[in-house]
Image (tube, rainbow over all chains, first blue to last red; front, side, top):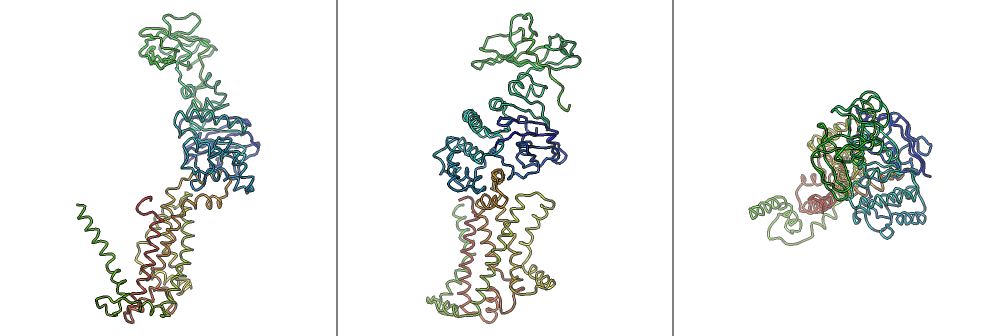
Length: 347
Length: 256
């Protein structure tokens, strides 16, 4: 049966490089968890530790409440989809999907039935006799997925599974992946460097940096309230303003002051999403406002991005439609859209 | 330029194959003194079929080559897999040490083996010959199998393991099918190394129970007969067949 994943104090080094640094993480049973981070952040190592390819130096990994950190890969009962799919070239599609059942000595008839069921689930029913090299990228992806779930693993691990597909196919497969994951109800951990993909697919996301978990939570919550400058910049776009807080006022380094939704003291950075900001000819009462020069407007159909400059600091403002604003203007945003950021983890 | 290239190629091939061709031709010539024109006969082959020493030596050569192929291919393939899969202390040294035995003159290797085998009590005889041949053949097997493994995606082994396959199942069902052509090519090399081996066999074989090349050498010393041409022609045919097969499996000259 599918089980949740619990990770406690997971630490691992490659030589002197600390790739995982005390990771604590819970993935609820049946949920979809997206691990996000730049390359070298440790997200792939973390996934490989759950898979069993990396035996961590310290810390615990439980799958379905059972400690597995010393259990070899082949006995962990996981399913994994690799970046390049890793389909066995000497086998047909059906043989690929049936491989895990064959090693478990499932009788031939039952094997055939379960393979057919898995292929139907990924909508590849009639292609069982094909070879991997006769399939398109999207079809290979589906075969890899069917092969990973046919053994009914306790957890499904996906290592950048969509990165080899072109944009249109990737969006289609995102929808498919989510549907299949829901239908099977399998706990899924998913590694990606594509923030949009993580936001779309995941029930919860975790952002990794230098082997540490910077922030974790539902995509919406993490997006709306990034914890640090790194999280704010990594997930979507963010305007970062720095200054010194006195109560609910933030005196900005470039002069001017803005209001904070909560009180604080001392040096502070805040984030404001470009879409929370508006451009106006005058400051708006009850809102934060900064006088800017609009340097450029990039029109892209439904939205327009305005590149502005305030006291030497570039600000990005995203508006619906392409209102032609140029020269001097005010950037305004609701006080509540000002997100207080914590100092960086480990900094 | 192209015409010059063709002439050059023809000269090289002629230089390589003309002596062999002449020998083959003479094995079918009635005159034992290489007199021309060629009068076709299979007389020498018939005589050869009645030559007990040569036949016994041929049998010895065949079974020794067979055992050598089996042992060298198994050990060489396992060694290539180990070098592919694992990082360990001294791996680079080990890999570098695989090649010198190919370059060391067989005369030296043979002498060294003879001294060593007497030293540890194995002495001369077929077991010594087999050990010697296996030692000579293993580097060839490793090199050929390792070349094939370089085209193998390690993620395939990882994928098989996530699906629950034991190490043996991974090797048997995933890795071996991919490197099979390399293993077969390695086996053919091992067979050729053993079957064509003269120097090491000469040192290590017991008189009276010797291999074909050694027997031919003794026969030539007693006096050259067209029978030698006949048996040599057969050996060349077999060896070339084996090497052509090996080249085919090792895909020399690129993928298909």
